[in-house]
Image (cartoon, helix red, strand yellow):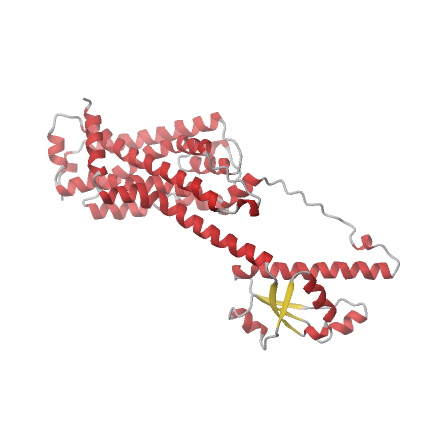
Length: 391
């Protein structure tokens, strides 16, 4: 039997017996992301929907100066609360999402036909109050437009004179693209899952065996070091792919627990999406396995390898952050860059777009080329006699 296959079967069988490796590679790694994501998204959506449907309860100072305004706001779902002594302190201390203040001169300005001013106190740094402030301002603007129209009619003029330009907003987003914007962090979770799925094997099969002094007896056998490396890499890739499949399946199931009908979204996380993700991620699986093995080979102990790989885990964050912050338009050259190509391709699939065969081929060819290069570098390190010596 081929030596690489023997080593692959040996390493896979031994690690399948290790409960810690199984839990980290096939449970904790692939499932922690979907569980945290679905919990956060559900909490956020439930809060936003509850705030949008519930009456808007905010303190009002000087409500007696503008009874008509308050009545008009009530018709739009506003529920005025008793005034507070200090509106600034109430907002800063989070006692109120916002405070509406009607000055004493509101009635006089209104009677004279002059602009009547109201004040809205809020803290723009508080994200939990943005919807309340937006709703209040929309109510006030709606009342202002309606009142302006009535004044023009009273003077025998058409309300259209106050709106010389009418904006007809045409939103071109689709249910899939809106869902893709919500799930834009998925590519990072997939890369992180592949990383975690093979990390413990990579550490144990190189740094761990080196620390246990079991590499030297293995290298004594009449087998080329690169064959030993291929067998270990294959075992790491097998666990990484299994972890990735569990993660994709978990996100597919998790998407069903999000109230998509209320959000007007369509996630489209089905078997076709899972297959396309798997194809795009294949070169990255081999590249990460080779990179993890290389780092573990340079480490003198199991703990040291864990430390280095923990720092290396931060690398996948870079393209995710760049694509989420910078308005980068997808270009063909991006598919030639490992990690970035997967990020761009999966994001395009989430948005409901299509990744062409040429783009997939570019991603695979360039990704496997870099992976093979990294594998060759790792093979040279494995060929060194000092690798088997525990420091």
